[in-house]
Amino acid sequence: MTLEAVLLQNGHPEDFVRFVLYMIWYPLVVVQFLASCFADHPIPHAELSKEHNPCPELRTSFLNQITFQWFTGLAILGNKRPLESEDLWSLNDHDTSKSVVPDFEKRWLPALRRYNVAKQQYNAKQQRAVEFNHEEVQIVDGNRRSSKSAGSTSKPPEHPSVLWPLFKTYKWTFLAGLIFKLTFDLMQFISPQLLRLLISFIEHKERPLWHGIVIASLMFIVALLQSMILHQYFHKMFRLGMNIRSVLTAAVFTKSLRLSNAERKNRTVGEIVNLMSVDIQRFQDMTTFIMLFWSAPLQVTLSIVFLWQILGPAVLAGLGVLIAMVPLNSFLSIKMRKYQVEQMKHKDDRLKMMSEILNGMKVLKLYAWEPSMEKMVLDIRKKEITVLKKLAFLNAATTLSWACAPFMVAVLTFGVYVMVDPENNILTPQITFVSLALFNILRFPLAIFAMIISQAVQCVVSNKRIKSFLSAEEMDPSLVDRTSATS
Image 1 (cartoon, rainbow, N blue to C red):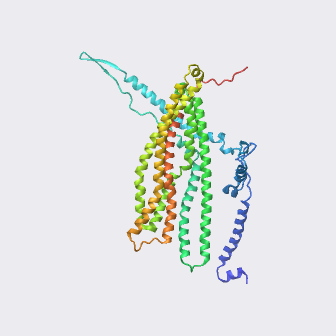
Image 2 (tube, helix red, strand yellow):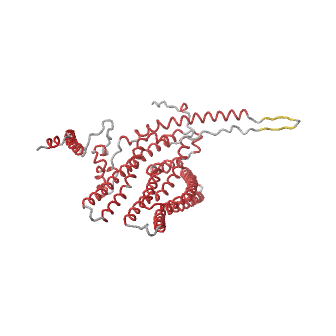
Protein backbone atom coordinates (compact mmCIF):
# COMPACT_ATOMS: atom_id res chain seq x y z
CA MET A 1 0.00 0.00 0.00
CA THR A 2 1.34 3.38 -0.97
CA LEU A 3 1.83 6.33 1.41
CA GLU A 4 -0.98 8.18 -0.35
CA ALA A 5 -3.38 5.28 0.24
CA VAL A 6 -2.42 5.10 3.92
CA LEU A 7 -2.96 8.84 4.50
CA LEU A 8 -6.26 8.85 2.62
CA GLN A 9 -7.43 5.70 4.43
CA ASN A 10 -6.99 7.42 7.79
CA GLY A 11 -9.45 10.10 6.70
CA HIS A 12 -7.01 13.03 6.59
CA PRO A 13 -6.47 13.98 2.93
CA GLU A 14 -5.01 17.34 3.99
CA ASP A 15 -2.13 15.45 5.65
CA PHE A 16 -1.07 14.12 2.27
CA VAL A 17 -1.13 17.61 0.74
CA ARG A 18 0.88 18.97 3.66
CA PHE A 19 3.37 16.10 3.30
CA VAL A 20 3.83 16.74 -0.43
CA LEU A 21 4.32 20.46 0.05
CA TYR A 22 6.85 19.81 2.79
CA MET A 23 8.83 17.41 0.61
CA ILE A 24 8.93 20.08 -2.10
CA TRP A 25 9.86 22.87 0.30
CA TYR A 26 12.65 21.05 2.14
CA PRO A 27 14.83 20.26 -0.94
CA LEU A 28 14.43 23.86 -2.06
CA VAL A 29 15.77 25.05 1.30
CA VAL A 30 18.74 22.69 0.97
CA VAL A 31 19.42 23.97 -2.56
CA GLN A 32 19.20 27.55 -1.31
CA PHE A 33 21.70 26.76 1.45
CA LEU A 34 24.12 25.17 -1.00
CA ALA A 35 23.74 28.09 -3.43
CA SER A 36 24.64 30.53 -0.67
CA CYS A 37 27.98 28.74 -0.32
CA PHE A 38 29.04 30.21 -3.65
CA ALA A 39 30.00 33.84 -4.20
CA ASP A 40 27.24 36.20 -5.25
CA HIS A 41 27.69 38.90 -7.83
CA PRO A 42 28.51 42.30 -6.35
CA ILE A 43 25.58 44.62 -5.81
CA PRO A 44 25.32 46.90 -8.87
CA HIS A 45 25.20 50.21 -6.98
CA ALA A 46 28.05 49.18 -4.65
CA GLU A 47 30.94 49.27 -7.07
CA LEU A 48 34.20 47.73 -6.04
CA SER A 49 37.21 49.91 -5.51
CA LYS A 50 39.17 50.68 -8.66
CA GLU A 51 42.46 50.31 -6.79
CA HIS A 52 44.99 47.66 -7.65
CA ASN A 53 44.19 45.56 -4.58
CA PRO A 54 40.43 45.73 -3.85
CA CYS A 55 39.00 44.22 -0.68
CA PRO A 56 37.53 40.75 -1.39
CA GLU A 57 34.73 41.14 1.17
CA LEU A 58 32.05 42.21 -1.32
CA ARG A 59 32.95 39.43 -3.76
CA THR A 60 32.48 36.57 -1.31
CA SER A 61 29.43 34.50 -0.48
CA PHE A 62 27.09 34.93 2.45
CA LEU A 63 28.63 32.04 4.42
CA ASN A 64 32.08 33.38 3.65
CA GLN A 65 31.17 36.78 5.04
CA ILE A 66 29.60 35.56 8.29
CA THR A 67 32.60 33.29 8.94
CA PHE A 68 35.21 35.87 7.75
CA GLN A 69 36.84 33.27 5.56
CA TRP A 70 37.82 36.05 3.13
CA PHE A 71 40.27 37.36 5.73
CA THR A 72 42.13 34.05 6.10
CA GLY A 73 44.60 34.74 3.27
CA LEU A 74 45.80 38.00 4.80
CA ALA A 75 46.12 36.38 8.23
CA ILE A 76 48.25 33.56 6.80
CA LEU A 77 50.44 36.06 4.95
CA GLY A 78 50.89 38.09 8.15
CA ASN A 79 51.94 34.93 9.95
CA LYS A 80 54.62 34.22 7.36
CA ARG A 81 56.14 37.70 7.22
CA PRO A 82 55.44 41.25 8.42
CA LEU A 83 52.71 42.91 6.39
CA GLU A 84 53.55 45.85 4.18
CA SER A 85 51.35 48.61 2.80
CA GLU A 86 51.17 46.85 -0.57
CA ASP A 87 49.65 43.78 1.10
CA LEU A 88 46.70 45.68 2.54
CA TRP A 89 43.44 45.94 0.62
CA SER A 90 41.95 49.18 -0.52
CA LEU A 91 38.93 50.56 1.28
CA ASN A 92 35.48 49.60 0.10
CA ASP A 93 33.75 52.39 -1.75
CA HIS A 94 31.19 52.97 1.03
CA ASP A 95 34.01 53.40 3.58
CA THR A 96 35.97 56.07 1.70
CA SER A 97 35.88 59.73 2.72
CA LYS A 98 34.13 60.78 -0.49
CA SER A 99 31.19 58.58 0.52
CA VAL A 100 30.94 59.08 4.30
CA VAL A 101 31.78 62.79 4.63
CA PRO A 102 28.88 64.16 2.48
CA ASP A 103 26.38 62.05 4.44
CA PHE A 104 27.59 63.55 7.71
CA GLU A 105 27.71 67.11 6.38
CA LYS A 106 24.05 66.90 5.32
CA ARG A 107 23.15 66.42 9.01
CA TRP A 108 25.83 68.62 10.60
CA LEU A 109 25.83 71.78 8.46
CA PRO A 110 22.12 72.64 9.07
CA ALA A 111 22.70 72.42 12.84
CA LEU A 112 25.78 74.63 12.49
CA ARG A 113 23.84 77.20 10.44
CA ARG A 114 21.08 77.30 13.06
CA TYR A 115 23.71 77.91 15.74
CA ASN A 116 25.31 80.73 13.74
CA VAL A 117 21.91 82.42 13.26
CA ALA A 118 21.14 82.09 16.97
CA LYS A 119 24.58 83.44 17.85
CA GLN A 120 24.12 86.46 15.57
CA GLN A 121 20.74 87.17 17.13
CA TYR A 122 22.23 86.88 20.60
CA ASN A 123 25.12 89.23 19.74
CA ALA A 124 22.71 91.74 18.24
CA LYS A 125 20.54 91.59 21.35
CA GLN A 126 23.56 92.07 23.58
CA GLN A 127 24.71 95.04 21.48
CA ARG A 128 21.27 96.69 21.72
CA ALA A 129 21.23 96.12 25.48
CA VAL A 130 24.65 97.75 25.87
CA GLU A 131 23.64 100.74 23.75
CA PHE A 132 20.36 101.16 25.62
CA ASN A 133 21.93 100.78 29.07
CA HIS A 134 25.03 102.92 28.49
CA GLU A 135 26.46 104.85 31.38
CA GLU A 136 24.26 107.85 32.28
CA VAL A 137 25.22 110.77 34.42
CA GLN A 138 22.44 112.21 36.44
CA ILE A 139 22.34 115.16 38.80
CA VAL A 140 19.93 114.63 41.63
CA ASP A 141 19.84 117.09 44.51
CA GLY A 142 23.20 118.46 43.45
CA ASN A 143 24.93 115.05 43.57
CA ARG A 144 26.40 113.22 40.59
CA ARG A 145 25.27 109.63 40.38
CA SER A 146 26.15 107.07 37.71
CA SER A 147 24.13 104.00 36.91
CA LYS A 148 25.49 100.99 35.00
CA SER A 149 23.46 98.18 33.63
CA ALA A 150 24.53 94.62 33.81
CA GLY A 151 23.32 94.13 30.27
CA SER A 152 21.17 91.31 29.06
CA THR A 153 20.76 88.28 31.27
CA SER A 154 19.96 85.86 28.44
CA LYS A 155 22.26 82.91 27.99
CA PRO A 156 24.32 82.48 24.82
CA PRO A 157 23.30 79.62 22.53
CA GLU A 158 24.91 76.27 23.23
CA HIS A 159 27.35 74.76 20.77
CA PRO A 160 25.68 72.15 18.55
CA SER A 161 26.75 68.66 19.48
CA VAL A 162 28.15 66.26 16.89
CA LEU A 163 26.54 63.26 18.59
CA TRP A 164 23.04 63.70 17.15
CA PRO A 165 24.25 64.25 13.54
CA LEU A 166 26.45 61.17 13.90
CA PHE A 167 23.51 59.12 15.14
CA LYS A 168 21.26 60.27 12.30
CA THR A 169 24.00 59.47 9.79
CA TYR A 170 24.61 55.93 11.06
CA LYS A 171 21.28 55.10 12.70
CA TRP A 172 20.84 51.86 10.73
CA THR A 173 24.31 50.66 11.72
CA PHE A 174 23.49 51.44 15.35
CA LEU A 175 20.22 49.53 14.99
CA ALA A 176 21.99 46.51 13.49
CA GLY A 177 24.54 46.57 16.31
CA LEU A 178 21.72 46.78 18.85
CA ILE A 179 20.00 43.71 17.37
CA PHE A 180 23.23 41.70 17.30
CA LYS A 181 24.10 42.65 20.89
CA LEU A 182 20.60 41.96 22.19
CA THR A 183 20.54 38.54 20.50
CA PHE A 184 23.95 37.68 21.94
CA ASP A 185 22.97 38.79 25.45
CA LEU A 186 19.78 36.73 25.41
CA MET A 187 21.58 33.66 24.08
CA GLN A 188 24.06 33.88 26.96
CA PHE A 189 21.36 32.71 29.35
CA ILE A 190 20.55 29.61 27.29
CA SER A 191 23.81 27.89 28.26
CA PRO A 192 23.11 27.87 32.04
CA GLN A 193 19.68 26.32 31.39
CA LEU A 194 21.25 23.66 29.16
CA LEU A 195 23.86 23.05 31.85
CA ARG A 196 21.07 22.51 34.37
CA LEU A 197 19.48 19.93 32.04
CA LEU A 198 22.84 18.23 31.48
CA ILE A 199 23.49 17.91 35.23
CA SER A 200 19.96 16.57 35.69
CA PHE A 201 20.64 14.00 32.94
CA ILE A 202 23.85 12.89 34.67
CA GLU A 203 22.09 12.54 38.02
CA HIS A 204 19.32 10.38 36.52
CA LYS A 205 21.18 7.53 34.85
CA GLU A 206 17.99 5.80 33.74
CA ARG A 207 17.40 8.44 31.06
CA PRO A 208 18.33 7.46 27.48
CA LEU A 209 21.73 8.39 26.13
CA TRP A 210 20.40 10.43 23.24
CA HIS A 211 19.04 13.00 25.71
CA GLY A 212 22.56 13.83 26.83
CA ILE A 213 23.85 13.90 23.23
CA VAL A 214 21.12 16.35 22.22
CA ILE A 215 21.82 18.62 25.21
CA ALA A 216 25.58 18.61 24.56
CA SER A 217 24.99 19.30 20.84
CA LEU A 218 22.69 22.20 21.68
CA MET A 219 25.34 23.66 23.99
CA PHE A 220 27.86 23.51 21.16
CA ILE A 221 25.45 25.04 18.62
CA VAL A 222 24.51 27.86 21.00
CA ALA A 223 28.18 28.66 21.67
CA LEU A 224 28.90 28.63 17.92
CA LEU A 225 26.01 30.97 17.15
CA GLN A 226 27.03 33.27 20.00
CA SER A 227 30.54 33.55 18.59
CA MET A 228 29.30 34.30 15.07
CA ILE A 229 26.83 36.95 16.25
CA LEU A 230 29.35 38.62 18.54
CA HIS A 231 31.95 38.84 15.78
CA GLN A 232 29.41 40.37 13.41
CA TYR A 233 28.60 42.92 16.10
CA PHE A 234 32.26 43.86 16.58
CA HIS A 235 32.81 43.98 12.82
CA LYS A 236 30.01 46.52 12.41
CA MET A 237 31.04 48.57 15.45
CA PHE A 238 34.72 48.77 14.45
CA ARG A 239 33.74 49.77 10.92
CA LEU A 240 31.40 52.38 12.41
CA GLY A 241 34.25 53.72 14.54
CA MET A 242 36.45 53.98 11.46
CA ASN A 243 33.75 55.93 9.60
CA ILE A 244 33.18 58.27 12.55
CA ARG A 245 36.90 58.95 12.73
CA SER A 246 36.94 59.76 9.01
CA VAL A 247 34.04 62.23 9.12
CA LEU A 248 35.24 64.01 12.27
CA THR A 249 38.81 64.29 10.99
CA ALA A 250 37.52 65.76 7.74
CA ALA A 251 35.27 68.17 9.65
CA VAL A 252 38.10 69.38 11.91
CA PHE A 253 40.52 69.76 8.98
CA THR A 254 37.96 71.67 6.89
CA LYS A 255 37.13 73.90 9.85
CA SER A 256 40.80 74.69 10.42
CA LEU A 257 40.99 76.11 6.87
CA ARG A 258 37.92 78.30 7.40
CA LEU A 259 38.75 79.84 10.78
CA SER A 260 38.62 83.61 11.02
CA ASN A 261 41.73 85.58 11.92
CA ALA A 262 40.47 86.22 15.45
CA GLU A 263 39.81 82.51 16.07
CA ARG A 264 43.04 81.48 14.40
CA LYS A 265 44.98 83.40 17.05
CA ASN A 266 43.31 81.35 19.79
CA ARG A 267 43.61 77.98 18.02
CA THR A 268 47.16 76.71 17.73
CA VAL A 269 48.37 74.00 15.38
CA GLY A 270 49.12 71.78 18.36
CA GLU A 271 45.53 72.03 19.59
CA ILE A 272 44.14 71.12 16.17
CA VAL A 273 46.49 68.15 15.89
CA ASN A 274 45.47 67.14 19.41
CA LEU A 275 41.82 67.18 18.38
CA MET A 276 42.44 64.89 15.42
CA SER A 277 44.87 62.51 17.14
CA VAL A 278 43.41 62.22 20.65
CA ASP A 279 39.83 63.48 20.89
CA ILE A 280 38.56 61.87 17.70
CA GLN A 281 40.30 58.62 18.68
CA ARG A 282 38.17 58.57 21.83
CA PHE A 283 35.03 58.77 19.72
CA GLN A 284 36.27 55.81 17.71
CA ASP A 285 37.05 53.83 20.86
CA MET A 286 33.63 54.66 22.32
CA THR A 287 31.72 53.00 19.47
CA THR A 288 32.86 49.59 20.73
CA PHE A 289 31.43 50.19 24.20
CA ILE A 290 28.39 52.33 23.45
CA MET A 291 25.96 49.39 23.42
CA LEU A 292 27.16 48.35 26.88
CA PHE A 293 25.32 51.31 28.42
CA TRP A 294 22.10 49.31 28.08
CA SER A 295 23.58 45.84 27.57
CA ALA A 296 25.44 45.71 30.89
CA PRO A 297 22.37 46.62 33.03
CA LEU A 298 20.29 44.12 31.02
CA GLN A 299 22.78 41.31 31.68
CA VAL A 300 22.95 42.20 35.38
CA THR A 301 19.15 42.29 35.66
CA LEU A 302 18.61 38.95 33.88
CA SER A 303 21.38 37.32 35.92
CA ILE A 304 19.79 38.45 39.17
CA VAL A 305 16.34 37.25 38.00
CA PHE A 306 17.64 33.75 37.18
CA LEU A 307 19.69 33.64 40.37
CA TRP A 308 16.56 34.58 42.34
CA GLN A 309 14.79 31.54 40.87
CA ILE A 310 17.63 29.33 42.08
CA LEU A 311 18.79 30.91 45.35
CA GLY A 312 15.75 32.95 46.35
CA PRO A 313 16.03 36.08 48.53
CA ALA A 314 19.71 35.36 49.22
CA VAL A 315 20.44 37.19 45.97
CA LEU A 316 19.50 40.45 47.70
CA ALA A 317 22.73 40.24 49.70
CA GLY A 318 24.78 40.28 46.51
CA LEU A 319 22.56 42.97 45.06
CA GLY A 320 23.28 45.10 48.11
CA VAL A 321 27.01 44.92 47.32
CA LEU A 322 26.36 46.22 43.81
CA ILE A 323 24.18 49.07 45.05
CA ALA A 324 26.76 50.02 47.68
CA MET A 325 29.43 50.39 44.99
CA VAL A 326 27.44 52.86 42.88
CA PRO A 327 28.15 55.98 45.02
CA LEU A 328 31.85 55.11 45.20
CA ASN A 329 32.20 54.79 41.44
CA SER A 330 30.12 57.92 40.87
CA PHE A 331 32.56 59.88 43.02
CA LEU A 332 35.51 58.37 41.17
CA SER A 333 34.00 59.21 37.77
CA ILE A 334 33.48 62.86 38.77
CA LYS A 335 37.10 63.13 39.88
CA MET A 336 38.27 61.44 36.68
CA ARG A 337 36.35 63.93 34.57
CA LYS A 338 37.91 66.84 36.44
CA TYR A 339 41.45 65.49 35.99
CA GLN A 340 40.75 64.64 32.35
CA VAL A 341 39.90 68.27 31.59
CA GLU A 342 43.03 69.42 33.41
CA GLN A 343 45.21 66.91 31.60
CA MET A 344 43.94 68.00 28.17
CA LYS A 345 44.62 71.64 29.09
CA HIS A 346 48.23 70.81 30.01
CA LYS A 347 48.62 68.80 26.80
CA ASP A 348 47.40 71.74 24.70
CA ASP A 349 49.84 74.08 26.51
CA ARG A 350 52.72 71.69 25.91
CA LEU A 351 51.94 71.30 22.20
CA LYS A 352 51.53 75.05 21.84
CA MET A 353 54.92 75.63 23.49
CA MET A 354 56.61 73.02 21.29
CA SER A 355 55.08 74.57 18.17
CA GLU A 356 56.42 78.00 19.13
CA ILE A 357 59.86 76.54 19.86
CA LEU A 358 60.04 74.81 16.48
CA ASN A 359 58.84 77.91 14.63
CA GLY A 360 61.38 80.13 16.39
CA MET A 361 64.29 77.72 16.38
CA LYS A 362 66.70 80.23 14.75
CA VAL A 363 66.07 82.88 17.40
CA LEU A 364 66.25 80.28 20.15
CA LYS A 365 69.66 79.10 18.93
CA LEU A 366 70.91 82.63 18.39
CA TYR A 367 70.24 83.72 21.97
CA ALA A 368 71.03 80.31 23.54
CA TRP A 369 67.60 79.98 25.11
CA GLU A 370 67.57 76.16 24.96
CA PRO A 371 67.88 75.58 28.75
CA SER A 372 65.12 78.04 29.64
CA MET A 373 62.79 76.66 26.94
CA GLU A 374 63.54 73.12 28.04
CA LYS A 375 62.70 74.04 31.62
CA MET A 376 59.37 75.55 30.57
CA VAL A 377 58.41 72.45 28.58
CA LEU A 378 59.48 70.10 31.37
CA ASP A 379 57.50 72.09 33.92
CA ILE A 380 54.35 71.66 31.85
CA ARG A 381 55.18 67.99 31.34
CA LYS A 382 55.61 67.49 35.09
CA LYS A 383 52.16 68.92 35.70
CA GLU A 384 50.77 66.64 32.99
CA ILE A 385 52.46 63.58 34.50
CA THR A 386 51.09 64.47 37.94
CA VAL A 387 47.55 64.54 36.55
CA LEU A 388 48.15 61.28 34.64
CA LYS A 389 49.27 59.60 37.87
CA LYS A 390 46.08 60.71 39.60
CA LEU A 391 44.04 59.38 36.68
CA ALA A 392 45.92 56.08 36.82
CA PHE A 393 45.18 55.70 40.54
CA LEU A 394 41.50 56.45 39.98
CA ASN A 395 41.34 53.98 37.09
CA ALA A 396 43.00 51.32 39.23
CA ALA A 397 40.56 51.95 42.09
CA THR A 398 37.55 51.74 39.76
CA THR A 399 38.82 48.59 38.07
CA LEU A 400 39.62 46.94 41.41
CA SER A 401 36.17 47.69 42.81
CA TRP A 402 34.33 46.20 39.84
CA ALA A 403 36.76 43.27 39.52
CA CYS A 404 36.15 42.28 43.15
CA ALA A 405 32.39 42.73 42.83
CA PRO A 406 31.53 39.33 41.22
CA PHE A 407 33.60 37.40 43.77
CA MET A 408 32.07 39.32 46.68
CA VAL A 409 28.57 38.86 45.28
CA ALA A 410 29.04 35.08 44.81
CA VAL A 411 30.56 34.46 48.25
CA LEU A 412 28.01 36.60 50.06
CA THR A 413 25.05 35.13 48.17
CA PHE A 414 26.10 31.49 48.77
CA GLY A 415 26.84 32.25 52.42
CA VAL A 416 23.46 33.85 53.06
CA TYR A 417 21.69 31.07 51.11
CA VAL A 418 23.17 28.36 53.36
CA MET A 419 22.82 30.30 56.63
CA VAL A 420 19.14 31.17 56.11
CA ASP A 421 18.02 27.53 56.16
CA PRO A 422 20.94 25.10 56.71
CA GLU A 423 18.67 22.02 56.55
CA ASN A 424 16.84 22.73 53.30
CA ASN A 425 19.24 25.05 51.47
CA ILE A 426 21.91 22.63 50.30
CA LEU A 427 24.43 23.52 47.63
CA THR A 428 23.82 20.64 45.24
CA PRO A 429 25.90 20.34 42.04
CA GLN A 430 22.97 21.62 39.98
CA ILE A 431 22.47 24.72 42.15
CA THR A 432 26.20 25.40 42.50
CA PHE A 433 27.31 25.05 38.89
CA VAL A 434 24.29 26.78 37.36
CA SER A 435 24.67 29.65 39.84
CA LEU A 436 28.39 29.91 39.07
CA ALA A 437 27.59 30.00 35.34
CA LEU A 438 25.23 32.92 35.99
CA PHE A 439 27.84 34.60 38.19
CA ASN A 440 30.34 34.27 35.33
CA ILE A 441 27.86 36.05 33.06
CA LEU A 442 27.52 38.69 35.77
CA ARG A 443 31.30 39.09 35.95
CA PHE A 444 31.75 40.72 32.52
CA PRO A 445 29.24 43.60 32.81
CA LEU A 446 30.47 44.40 36.32
CA ALA A 447 34.13 44.30 35.28
CA ILE A 448 33.49 46.36 32.14
CA PHE A 449 31.60 49.03 34.06
CA ALA A 450 34.88 50.67 35.08
CA MET A 451 36.05 50.88 31.47
CA ILE A 452 32.65 52.21 30.35
CA ILE A 453 32.76 54.99 32.94
CA SER A 454 36.33 55.91 32.03
CA GLN A 455 35.61 55.94 28.29
CA ALA A 456 32.40 57.92 28.79
CA VAL A 457 34.17 60.57 30.87
CA GLN A 458 36.91 60.97 28.27
CA CYS A 459 34.38 61.08 25.43
CA VAL A 460 32.34 63.80 27.18
CA VAL A 461 35.44 65.96 27.51
CA SER A 462 36.42 65.34 23.88
CA ASN A 463 32.89 66.11 22.71
CA LYS A 464 33.01 69.51 24.38
CA ARG A 465 36.37 70.31 22.81
CA ILE A 466 35.34 69.18 19.30
CA LYS A 467 31.96 70.94 19.24
CA SER A 468 33.57 74.11 20.60
CA PHE A 469 36.12 74.03 17.76
CA LEU A 470 33.59 73.19 15.04
CA SER A 471 31.36 76.06 16.23
CA ALA A 472 34.17 78.64 16.08
CA GLU A 473 33.77 81.75 13.94
CA GLU A 474 34.65 81.36 10.28
CA MET A 475 35.96 83.87 7.79
CA ASP A 476 33.50 85.68 5.54
CA PRO A 477 33.20 83.66 2.29
CA SER A 478 32.57 86.85 0.33
CA LEU A 479 36.07 88.07 1.18
CA VAL A 480 37.73 85.05 -0.42
CA ASP A 481 38.98 85.54 -3.98
CA ARG A 482 38.16 82.38 -5.93
CA THR A 483 39.35 83.53 -9.36
CA SER A 484 42.08 81.40 -10.85
CA ALA A 485 45.41 83.03 -11.66
CA THR A 486 46.17 83.30 -15.38
CA SER A 487 49.64 83.37 -16.80
